Image (cartoon, rainbow, N blue to C red):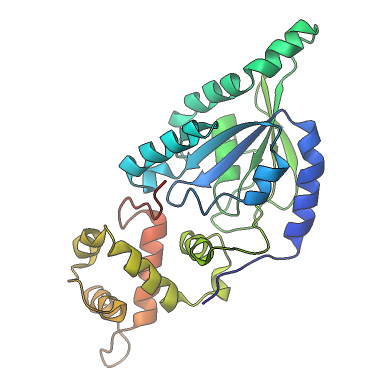
Length: 279
């Protein structure tokens, strides 16, 4: 199955982002720590190529901790300031503030030499749908100032948020890009919930997730569902259905219900800390 989703409003949002990029000093890009490569929009690299950059590995609490460290090193080596983050918790915000100051040090020094004092850093917060931008802004600001939701497309338009005298943030809608050259990118985005689930085949999606879990996390399937590795993903789904009482009338395993359960457990972190991509 081809995983692709690019509703019309994203073209407009991209054009607006291009205009707004002229107003900011810094681009703060949120990626999903479980798929740091697939959750980076290549269009943002082009739009923000002359700006200071920070990459925030959000939902790091759901990702493999060893992989978090490797991805932080990867982004740092590529010239980006990188911070791992759980945007739902305010406790991890201090390193973000430090990264903003470091990333904009040269800009602030230039301002000082030109006699421009106390102008706040203006940062654009960008990322794909459902990566946690609004949740990050609310946690960073310490108040509910941006709409949040656990579905893609909650932020429809731009809004400026004054955090303090030093930083202003511009929240932007999540945007994807028109064509995924690598099919695994679309699959990974579908797995974490950055696409409209109503357009997806939940059984196929769950089967693809099981294949990836067999590559290093199969113990989590056994631990949570009591399944033994089978030769086919359908067999594993069948075991999940039976062990979790996902049954139709007559006791037949409800594979679709089991597939939905597996996906929800993965997305919420109940299945365990999992990273699907290595640097």
